[in-house]
Length: 244
Ligand SMILES: NC(=O)c1ccc[n+]([C@@H]2O[C@H](COP(=O)([O-])OP(=O)(O)OC[C@H]3O[C@@H](n4cnc5c(N)ncnc54)[C@H](OP(=O)(O)O)[C@@H]3O)[C@@H](O)[C@H]2O)c1
Image 1 (cartoon, rainbow, N blue to C red):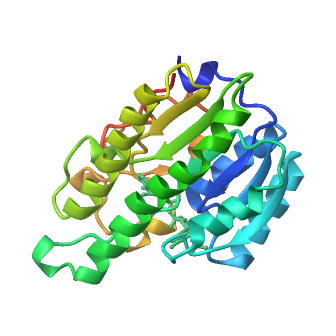
Image 2: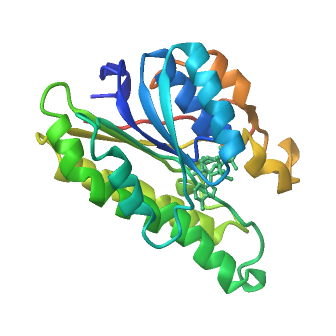
């Protein structure tokens, strides 16, 4: 079953990294469909702006200012949603990237990418799984992991990032199979280069295969799960979704 076949309306859940970029765009999409969302990120100002935009679209939100790489963060998220009658959506979107030759990459940057892109979503998923399973008894809960086209095409100078993004993709794929028939659908998206804050430090353009899609372009057409594949000169990887 593709994500586009799932009922995306009135979802109650959590979106990490919801203050800007792809996370904000996803918050608006679920908000437009009547979602009640816990927006998680480190900056109150950007999360507040997302909350305002989601309200404009018809959704409701709460905000949790949290660094997902800090000890206890996952437990605090769990506590925040503990009183909710249902949690049937988890979007693991927050991520970071440091590009460059591996031998020039600091150990701190290696840890930072692994901690945020891989360890945090795995621990958050593990912690929330009982609630997601319980809430998914009717139409099924959704776990949506934001990977990257780089998980599919190993781009030079992105070795560590690629490791984290293929890691989260395979985590999702294995979990998807593990949870078949248990009321939790697991989907993975593989965005191509998208014009967000994350890409401001990235100078390569079309000529090096790094043509970017504007966030507005896909948000404008946004029908989750119905994204056209990127046929431009970029990575050539669009939004591929696998869910059951
Ligand atoms: N842009 C692209 O071309 C592209 C392509 C493929 C995949 N992706 C993936 O898409 C996801 C979103 O990326 P984006 O392009 O939208 O990036 P972005 O605009 O930089 O947004 C990243 C979000 O993550 C949050 N975040 C960062 N560190 C965090 C931490 N330690 N704890 C909690 N939240 C944290 C940020 O909010 P705060 O600063 O408030 O914490 C921000 O809202 C990432 O997983 C990225 O790897 C992006």
